[in-house]
Image (cartoon, rainbow, N blue to C red; front, side, top):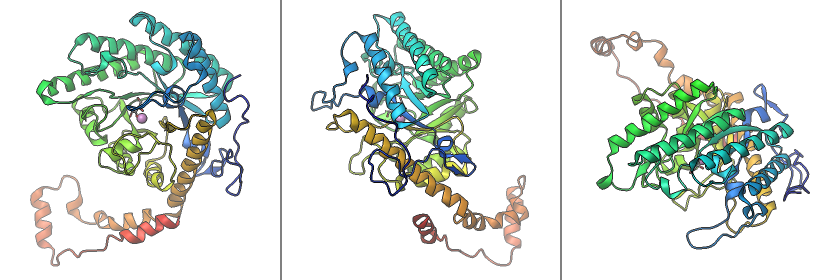
Length: 431
Ligand code: XUL
Ligand code: CO
């Protein structure tokens, strides 16, 4: 028996249903743009917020108690896994994600901790085989324990760098063993509070070296999926090194890693960086490093990472539209890196949160697909740039003098043309 045993699997009942635990938009078998919604969306439940989060905040004690939060730690880890896979069954999601510390407890020292990770990894393998649920990505928690307070790869203490390497090696081994489609690295505390105590160039070099070691190892063990960096501009450190998609691309180029590493983009991280979610997806596509999405939202009135479930399709539609323009998801997926609020203490709150979030994703995706199918946006964009197919000076290899001569030879000066923004915004609103 788990907290979710009594709940049936949530099914698609269509937009008219009054059943709160039914999907209105997420019909997993519906075919759009040549693939089913299940194949397009590749939905994933995250372990940490759903099964580890206890509602504690800086002002108060935990509010959320689950059966697996007490007792012998390894038995509790297995009970947590049983409950997790039961929730995946209820939601009918194809994927899940985890940090090593979400699935298994710290042991007494490094070797014991790594043994715990591997042991629960074996147990998760059995759960996957029995359920058909697959691992979208694994990752390592290199930020919660005090040893990581000054960073993991960027720590001034080389022993923390080595400890982190051992931790990632095991998390990647377990992800590989479980057939994980990607491996994620969010730069937890890779950043700084003040330059007064920080050698920024040295820390970037350490981070570049760490990532190179991980990429080399991934190739040696034959892990086929990409390594994904998850950009975030601030929190927990004042200045995170993986600020946004463009910053990470510059970093990857500098250390020669742009072929092996892609991005896991998160909606509210984009907003915290002063970008829209769709901007980050477009930048990743432009550089060929789009990987996966964390689809949790922020709150426009709060300037931090609230990790809320999506509740408004319009916040995702344009990001999904950019994603579709780039060909859609391949190894990546849509991960709910989202948590219920502190007062949502019932297990059923987790179910409602995911059902609502999944439906919002489906609604936004279907709208994005209609925008692609309708061509109402693509046409005007190609028209806008149509002039570039004609002139000689557009040819690659033309020198500055040749481009200048072409401009001087033209009799008329270029004519301004409307950007048609409002017309296009209306196309989106009406899709
Ligand atoms: C933190 C965050 C992480 C990553 C995985 O803001 O998004 O949970 O998704 O480490
Ligand atoms: Co995230």
